[in-house]
Length: 400
View 1 (cartoon, rainbow, N blue to C red):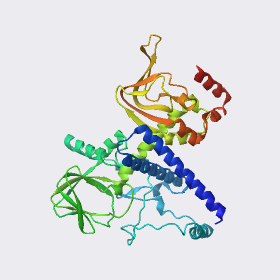
View 2 (tube, rainbow, N blue to C red):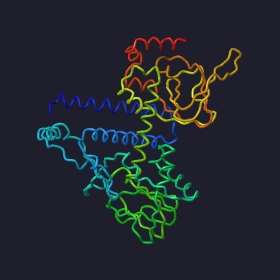
View 3 (cartoon, helix red, strand yellow):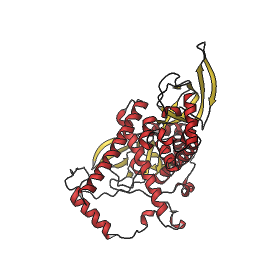
View 4 (cartoon, rainbow, N blue to C red):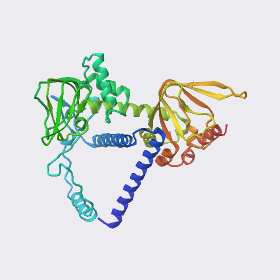
C-alpha cells in the first residue's frame, strides 16, 4: 500500500477521533455527571452498540439470504455469519501488504488472557423475527423492585430507557441452583446475565476467590453483548435462586426500541421547517445524534433572554411556554406535547431565547446542539439556501 493511502487512512482516523471527543465533551458539559468516568464509559458503549447495529443492518440488506434461513431453532440463532462470501485473493493480498507496511511498529499490549485462544462474536439479529421469544414471567412486587434497583445501578442498564428496563424485568426467567452447583464455568460459553434473588455465591478467577454475591448482586453482563468465554467461575455456596436474562432477548429489546425511536425522531424532524431542505440521509444523521434529556415537573428547559445553543424535540410529556409581559409578569402563551419542538432558531443564530419553557410533569426530550449540527452537516444557512422559498420563510421567522 502506498504512503499516500496510509496518510489518508491516518487523517480519517484522526478526524473521527476528534469528532467523538468533541461530542463527548459537549454532552458532559450539558449533563454535568457526578461520575465522569462512568459517563464516558456509557457514552462509548452506547456508540459501539449503535454502530454494530447499523453495520449488521447494512450487511443484511446486501446479503442474499432466503427468509427461512434467518430464524430461531431450539433457542439457537441461525446467523448471517454462516453465509459464505466469494473469496477475493487481491483484497487478501492488499490487506496482508497493509499489515506488513503500515502497522508493524504498533505497540503490543499484553493481557491476562494472552495465552488463551479467545473468540468474540455477535449474532446477526433481526428484532422483528425475535418477537416470539418474548415472555411474561410472573414476579412479586418485591422481586420486581429488587430487579429494578439492581438494573438501575448497573453500568450496562443505566442509560437504557425506562420502557426497555420494564420489558427486561418482565421477561427475566427464574433459575434455581442447589448448594455446590457451578452456575458459570470459567472459559465456558456465556449466554446469560444473572441477578441474585436469594442465596450466596462465590466468584473465582483461576482458582482464587475474588468476590461474593448475595440478593441484588449481578454477574455475567458481558454475555449480553458478546459470545465470549466466561472470565470467571461462579459457585453457589447455598441453595440459590437467580433471575436470568439471555443475550438474544436483551439485544432484541434494545434493537427494537432503538429502531422504533429512530423512526419516531425522523418523523418529528421532517415536520420541522428548518429541516425541510435536508436529504433523507441527513435526517438519519441528525436522528442518530440526538441526545436524550429528562426533566422533572417545574424544571426550566430554556429561559427567556438567555443565549440559546440547543434545539429540542418532545419525546414524551408536556411543557408550558411563558413570555414576559410589559408589566414584568410571566404569561402563559402556549402548551407543547409529544412531537412538538422548540429552540430550533438556536441552530440559525445566536439571539437570546424568546420565551421560557417549563416542564409540566415528567418531561422527556431529545436535543441537538448547534455545534453538533454544524459538525454533522455544515452551516445551517448553507443548507437553507437549497430551498429559496423555505430560506426566506425561516429568515422572516428568525427576525420576528
